[in-house]
Amino acid sequence: MNTDSIPATPVYTVTLTASGSAAIDGEELDSAAGRTPDEARVAALAELKVKAAFHGRPVRATAKEADGIVYHLIVAPDGAVSTLDQPHPTPPAPRRAPAAERPAHPAAVDPPARPVGPPEHLPQPASDQTPAPAAMTGEWAAPLPSDMTYRLQWAQLVRQEQAGALAEAVLMADRIETALTAQYGPQHPHTINVLTVRAWLTLRAGGELAELVELLIETADRRQEAKAPAEDTLRAIRNAHVLWRYLTGEDAVTARELAEPLLVLLDLDDDDGRRARDVVRWVESGGAALGAA
Figure 1 (cartoon, one colour):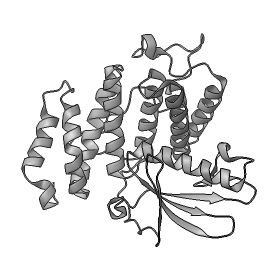
Figure 2 (cartoon, rainbow, N blue to C red):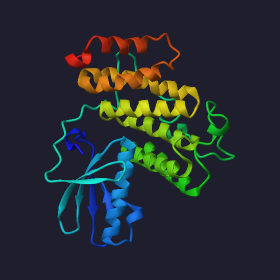
Figure 3 (cartoon, one colour):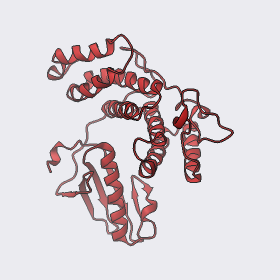
């Protein structure tokens, strides 16, 4: 495995204890509770495998054992683990998309129809008292199954969003989405609905431009494949284009890599084609080679 080609971020921190617990980035794993140290270690690596699968590539991790020994690891989506003989490289300072500001060029980020904003605008688990949003019909009308575990987790997500704890809300959405993927599959409406919520919460929270563009492209692509209602699919595509435009000025190489999947999605956009032409012009101008938009 060529570890030099693996991005410097994210680097997950795994903490193991002698009592048989494990935590990733400070969050304890329920699957490791009450186990032997070896079992807790296996549970932590299994969780890192999931995170690698989410990113679609190997990820970096630092494992801190109970005896104080620290290991620097690379974990692949197939579960393969490599141990490095030196610490992970220091990542560059990230370029963050401002959470409180809206881009002014080439177009303002289009806020989603449902999942962000006041908590009452978040889609709720379906019930007799909770009407489905107008844009959601048929099998898409139930954002979550009626299972009580999902209801409790969703209630916690809403509280976090209401309190402005967007990073925590994103993590909770990711946890719910992971469970739904395992139970229903990646293209089920339940899973796609929560993926969409996670994307909007992440957009609100701000983050690295490249990761935001990738997430929005993934969201739009999976929504399109699952034949989800078009409104939020188009919104994700247009938001991806806006942030991609910023990325061309910050990381032209990555912007060039993302141009092709973005163009595929822009073909679904029913506007006059100006966004697609914008991407094509930039690519043909050699912007990636020049490092400028």
